[in-house]
Length: 246
Length: 214
Ligand SMILES: Nc1ncnc2c1ncn2[C@@H]1O[C@H](COP(=O)(O)OP(=O)(O)OP(=O)(O)O)[C@@H](O)[C@H]1O
Ligand SMILES: [Mg+2]
Image (cartoon, rainbow over all chains, first blue to last red; front, side, top):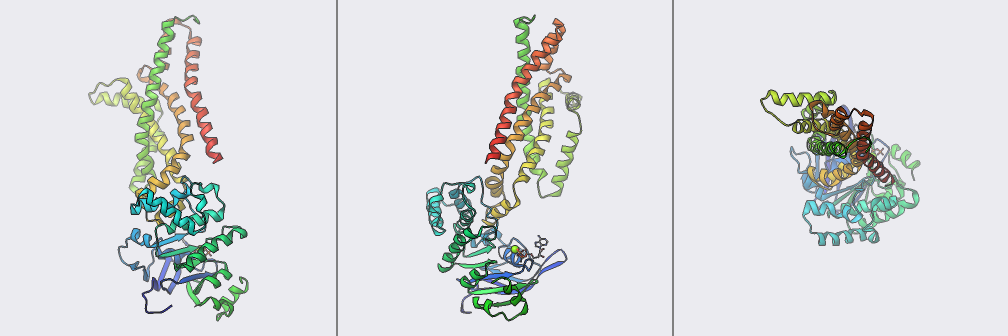
């Protein structure tokens, strides 16, 4: 990616602590528009925390973070504006169990953006088609498999037409045979030019889909590079990490 | 019939009618009082939680007949003559509100935190998160214990007899005083209470089972 375009996400020396424990110890990271960045690393290395900072779920103590033109270090951040630009999907799908798939997907567009009901239905059709679930519009979440639920969660985020998508280990709760369908949906999004940051333990997937892989270790960006860096680690820590991963 | 005149039996049933009226007052009043109490109990602001929990603790720590007395005589000290129905209704409101508030607080908190977070991440405002995401789920959880508590409300309206409120217990007592057939009279009263409460218990259990199936 060229440096000429404005980055969509820019961390600069970001520090974040929970109480006295410093979890992020000076993160520097840029995500260009259209880029796919995969965050990998050991449990507890700060991947989720970094991701949650990007959409304002966590505040940080020092440093800078700019996301889609929002300055998250500012005294007052309009989090609702930020979240219209940034979608997030979690390991636990967190669908709304009392609503149908269509209602799950259209709730936020209707309430936040005032989209009318006919238009909302069209929108649901469009985003559910993107994740290959056009036939599940009227189902309730409990009637779907884990993989289907996770794809609905992705569609629900997409319905807000975000500029940036965040994925936090979205396949970790799934059986291996359901993982593929979710990964394929993400791949399709990537090839359509969506900017995304994803935390994953699927090394092969990280290598194939990511423009940039970020290896986090002990709250720092330890090593970063294109997907193929996983084949030729420069640090002992990454070598050890992929040694039991790839 | 059973050694009682039709008029006497009709009189007992008349009392039952007022038992139902007082129960409804207790439930409606308890809802109006209990819902904000449930919200205050699960609010983020500390002072709201402290005040509301103090209130709940206090009401739950006082026997219902004593609440009846306090409300009834408390109002008359203020120089107001109020019918026993108003005093009993107010006392039932306090009592039911304190318990319903606790029940509903539990139901709101039983909705996973991740549901709040998911709604927040979709840019919904706080009231929108509560109304469209949390409340519908909490309501479903709340139906069985709420219907179950209705039974408690109906039974406990009988304490209004201490302030001479004319309900089923009171009318049975009056008929007993004039017929001296306590076993017959109070058995009839018991059967009427049971006939009101039993369908509600069945309903509560049915809701519960339905909820578990989903
Ligand atoms: N709410 C919290 N309060 C206190 N400490 C926390 C909190 N959330 C995370 N931490 C700590 O911060 C560190 C980083 O956690 P984080 O969840 O970002 O790691 P991760 O890289 O996502 O790990 P995993 O692969 O297990 O998801 C961990 O040591 C964790 O214990
Ligand atoms: Mg994590």
